[in-house]
Image (cartoon, rainbow, N blue to C red; front, top):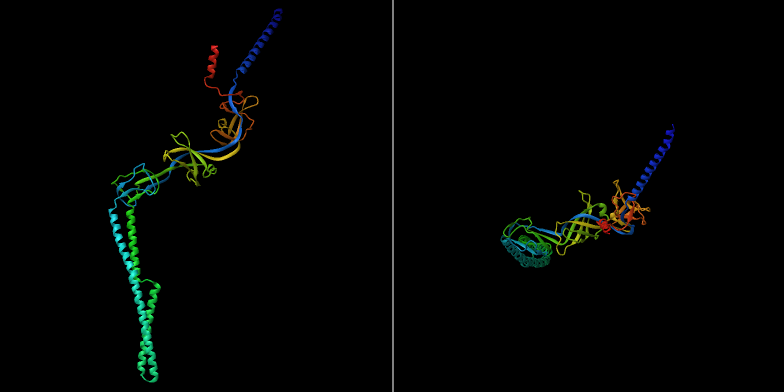
Length: 434
């Protein structure tokens, strides 16, 4: 009994020392963990106020501002080409001729018929018609003289009959003769007035019709002959010439293709809401493979209708090409300038992150306690350099730009310049050397 009472205090003291030791080790471990927790160096900025212009990016295909696939209207062998691929031509320039001996002969034959018709028409207008009019006028004058004479004889016999100097039979004969003269005069007068009023005759109409027919045939033959001289309707560069001299050019098949590449058209499609923010003359740029600097362009056409297949709007950009470096058919990347917002709240685009939940955008900010925090934001216009913040930030906030990706909320951060790779190792070596 005495031994047990003596051992009890010894066990209690041991347990007390063991508990103190455990507590001491736990406190040291927590202190060590707190000391080992790293402070992340990040770069950060305050939101700024300024203007931002929407940039609309889309793929485009370059096309010439004008193109002509020149088709012959007659089928004939090619006599001669005056251009090669790559030749520069002017509008109206002769590029090829076709064999045309048969057409030239037909044109000459029709020219002779046309000249003959012109001569016949001149004869009809200068001699036949005036002669007929003169004859009609003379017939009228003769009929008038005969009528006057017969009327005077009738008047004289009327007086002699009243005096009983002649029988009644002589008066009746003179009266009949006067009536016949009156009828002849009326017919001659009507004919003369008709010729005077109409001013032409059946022979003149016939000559006129023959002349018109001959002229039409001659012009048609001339047109057929002219089709063998093939000219370009536009200025530009010859991009295709599929035939050689001596081969037969078929009507309706291109023999020469000319493109005007002094300007190029970049054709692209954008969403309807983006097209509503564009206007004719809006500035744009295109990025061409193999060309270091972007090429300036301007909006030249905005389609008034949606594309039925994609429900997008076709937009054309006019691109200067004075040196001919841009080629038709090249795929390019176009950047168009859309809506501009003044006095917008702006942050660098690299600071905007997609929310881990998959909806919306977030940015990381430095809190007052020096720890990182997430902020849900509403983004408006966004370019490669800047993003417009519509809500979620204040100008006084400190937004993390570099080092924010993968950063846990609540992590202690220090704003400073970005560390260069290998700088930590270099410091260790220097420390070791010392």
